[in-house]
Length: 109
Length: 110
Image (tube, rainbow over all chains, first blue to last red; front, side, top):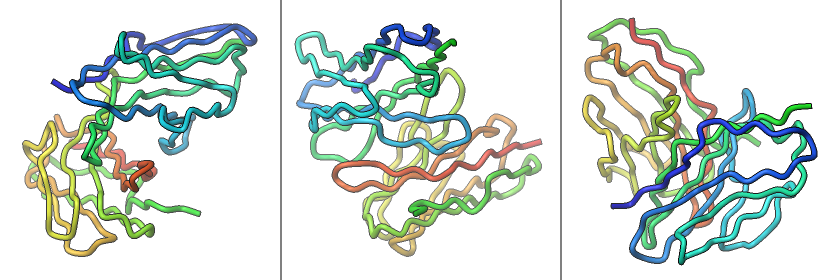
């Protein structure tokens, strides 16, 4: 079965602390993985894709096929990072996205 | 530079009513989606369309239908609204690199 698991519903960290939002996936083929973010009162938007290997707003995510994980990391959290984060899987050959249940990140002053 | 537009931000409907949620995209994408967003459940795919008049059921299609008569427009229909369909509904369209989402429609069924 194709599935994305985000084990934490809520993650609270202090400003300046490192952040890691966990994502594990279940898929037998070669997946494309994404992180989407939803800031308060804004629409859901793409944060980063594993295939582009970019750092966006200081966030990075590495695909670990052995552990079937795609954790999102940032070394120093900022208050403006507070948002809802969704990990998503797109099986090869399709345009459908399978989303996890989301993690709400709260960065405390 | 709004790319995906949902016709309503908020809707309140009565149980048993037929409800139409409209979504328009201006990016000429072939692929469009309807998701339901509920706390603790994330985004769940209701229906997916990969071309005009083409559709595919997602994970939770029961109680819903869709219409795609034109490439830019994808409509979600609740045939007979029920209280358990109270939710946030998100429309999206996708290129081969990214999905673009609408602002969402919060539907309350009373």
